[in-house]
Image (cartoon, rainbow over all chains, first blue to last red; front, side, top):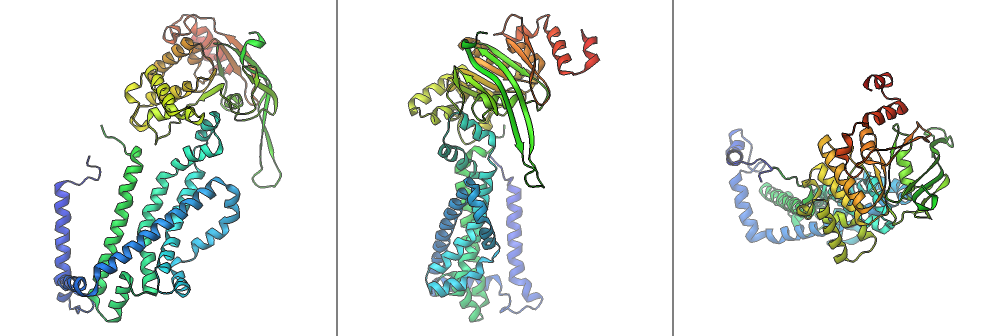
Length: 258
Length: 271
C-alpha cells in the first residue's frame, strides 16, 4: 500500500531539501546583501510568528479565515452541484442559461469583492460570497460535463428495467458524476482560500487577509510572511480534507495491486 | 412456430432514423436501419441474428426491449404489443454495464430495485443468482476487482434477476478472450435450457451462432432485412462445447460465410 512511492530514501531526501531551503533562507539574503525588511530571515519570521501568537491574535484570525473558507467552500460546492446537476439533466435550461453562466465565469470573481463590501460592509458576507463565486464554477462545470457524458447504454439499461427519470438521476447520473465532482472540489478547495483572503483584504478587520494588510501598512515584512504561511497551511488542510473524503466516497476507483 | 405460441414476434418491422444535416438547416438525411423484418421466437427457443456491421441488428433488439418504437410494424412480447420498456424482456450487451460504485450483489439487484422489490427479497434473489453464476464469493466485491469474464457473468445474473421471459443479447461475449468466451457460452446455454428461457442472440461469431442457437437468421447490409433462416439441426444445444466439435459445424460455417460474403472463394477450399 505504497501508492505514492514514498520510501525512506525519498523522505530523507525531502527533509534534507527542507533543511537546505531553511538554511538558504536564513543566511542567503544577508550573503547577497538583501536587507531584512525585504526578505526577513527564517528566524525572524519565526519570532514574529511567536509574537503574533501572543499579541496579535494569530490563532483568532486564522480560525476566522479557516471558518470563512469552510463556509464559502461548502456553499459554493453545493450551489455548483445543484446548478451542475440541474443544467446536466435539462438541456433546455443549459441552452438558456449558458451565455450568462459563461459571462459570469469569465468575469474575474475577485473584482466583485469591493462591490460586496459596499453592499454588506465589514461582515463575513462579502468574504463568503467571493469564495462561493470562485468555488462554484469548477464544481458546476465538472458536474455538468459528467452528467452529459454518462454512458447512454447505462441509461438504456436502466430504462429497459422501466426506470423513471428520477431513478436514472438518483441511481446513475448522480453517482456517475462523483469522480469529476471531486476533481472540481479539489480545485475549489484551494480557490476558496483566495476568495476569502481577497474579501478580507478589501474590507475587514478580522482574518488573515486583514493581517496581511496590517503587515503591509506597517512595513512589517515578517508579518506578511507569517500570514502567507498560515494561508498556505489552511489551503493544504482544505485540500487534504477533500482528498480524504474523496478516498472514502470513491473507494471503488482504487485499483488493487496483486 | 405457431403464431400464438411466440414469445417475441416481429411483424413487418421497419425502423427509419433521421439524421439532421450538419450545415444546411432542414437537410435531414433519412437512414433506413431495418426494413420489413418478420420473425417470431417460440417459447424456449434460442435464435441467433447474424449479419454485417451496421445492418440494424442492435436496432431490432432495442425495439424488442421497448427503448425505440418501430417506424412501421409492431413487436409483440408474450402477445402484448411492446410500446415501452416492460418486464417481459431484459437485455445484455457486450459491455457489462456494471455500476462501478455498487458491489456485485448491488449490481445484480439493480433491476429489482428499480422495479420496487423490497430490500430483503432482492438481496436473497441476487445472492441466489450469484450462486448459480458461480460468483457467490464475489458478492461484496466491486466490479473493478473482477476479471472481464466474471463481470460479464455478473451482468448475466443481473439480466436473469428480473426473470424475463425473453433475453435479448447483443454480442454478450465478443469482448472476452477465447477460453473465457467458451466457458461463458457453456454457462449461458446451460442456464437458458435449464430455465427454459427464450433468447435472441446477436453475434458476429459464426461458430457462436451455430453452437448456441436453434435457428440462425442472416441479415443483409443496411437497410437490414432477413435474407435467410437456417435451422441448426445439431444435437447438444445445452452443451455448446460438445456441439462445437460436431462434424457438420463446418457445413454451417461455409453456408454462413457464403451468405455473408466473407472470404468468397476461400470457403470452397475449406470444405
